[in-house]
Length: 154
Image (cartoon, rainbow, N blue to C red):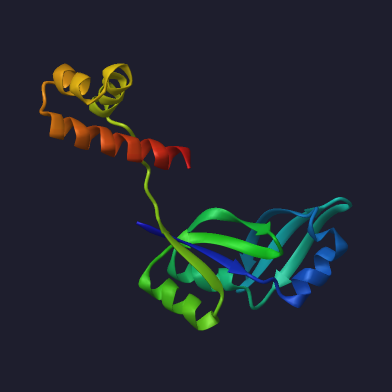
């Protein structure tokens, strides 16, 4: 499955509504009423409702699922959605910055955990002897396990 992270510059209405507290503003959520998106922003002095008629979010939700709640990051509103062809085409037409990445949930299998334990104690030969496999198979198993560990940590 692919995820699409979209960085959109907020419209003038949005920027005027949050004012000078843009950096201290916290995005609380949104709702859709009569085809318009209402953003809820928490500022130091209270809650602000921002009505957006040209927000990309309403169009995205017609074609895909929202994975992560939108947030304000470095002057952009950041949306993360499930990528499909319709969404990619829409984003290209809107000419907004979008980053596609593959979603993976790497988990070490019990065999990979055992291989890493043997590897930490004695190297590839220890893995091969401990699991009863060839040295080349042990190398591949440890390599896959280490790739997953790196992916989990990053």
